[in-house]
Image 1 (cartoon, helix red, strand yellow):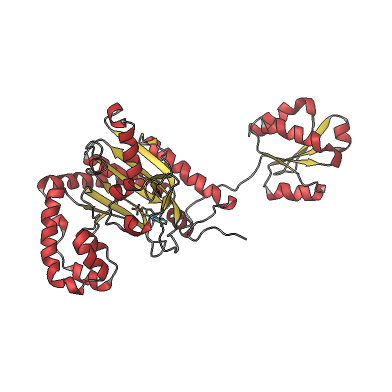
Image 2 (image 1 turned 45 degrees about the horizontal axis):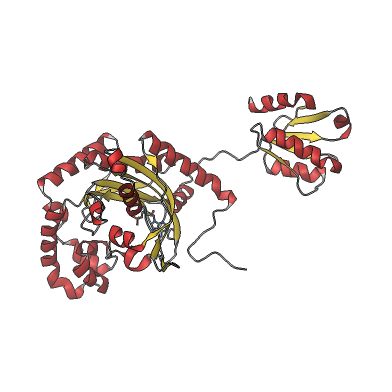
Length: 420
Ligand code: AMP
């Protein structure tokens, strides 16, 4: 048998209620904040992600699913959404139609990472992008939305970390200070960090190598070298979070290494999912649109990993989903009534009832077992002498009460059940 590709997962029917519930909460909260859904293609020109995420990032340098299609174009399955959203916004001039575009998405993403718990090659993210304003209230809004969604899913073991990257000018000055600090330590840094020293020095803060971390402990911090305007922005973000009662920590080492990232950056971590603990990450990207060849439009956004969030929900036993049930199971007493039973089920289904019946020619006993398995609220028996009198028997499965119903009065059954 052919199996699913490593790092991909089937979402089976017994898990789907959890996905639907999460998606419902996401759409509901996004719409309360007046964000509109956007759907973009699953694949894009490779250069969009190379420029939009940055050549020096792990995603672009080693994780993208890139291939040359039959028209010799290099295309990539989307590894994240922001670049696609900014592309769509520019392509359709959404910024000309509306000063501020507030958009959200729920979508599969693709990265060729080493699969492990909480790390897949096809995974799903939801997220938001607010494009068209540099107001720090929107930086805070991203954190509020993400946090509110996670809380609405019943998660409690959460840590919100925030930092400010300031603006490119002050960051360039800071990078020189960091370079000066690291130069004498250079040969003691890991090979990866030595490379980052040249290409993406801020990302050395992300290194997992123990020795790198020791060296970085005493490194000068960007937050100590921010310009006044950036500090003021960061202060506003903090004030809004305090007001919104969102507990947060400042983590001066939370960096994103690309020049078009500005001001706020944040992550929400879970204490209940093991080593892959980041549920969500985001930040401001005021230089991105220009980087992609569009007009200069400031923006801020976040992305959250659905598989990891559902894992956290499972570990915290936080999702209290109602037991699944159907309205009615139609039990056929006589084999030859198959068509009649099907016709009846059609009427009920077209009147918005969730109805099941037997397709496998099973015995009455087996049909009853099936009705119980589906947690049917009612069973409708069709057959026997009642049917000869043009009647069916409706049994309420919660109290066992039965009543005969004339087929002419089928609408009574419907209103009785729907009316509950
Ligand atoms: P990023 O786009 O890398 O900032 O990731 C945002 C969120 O997506 C992370 O916090 C994770 O929850 C999730 N995520 C990222 N990569 C993966 C992956 N390979 N498998 C599952 N979830 C992921």
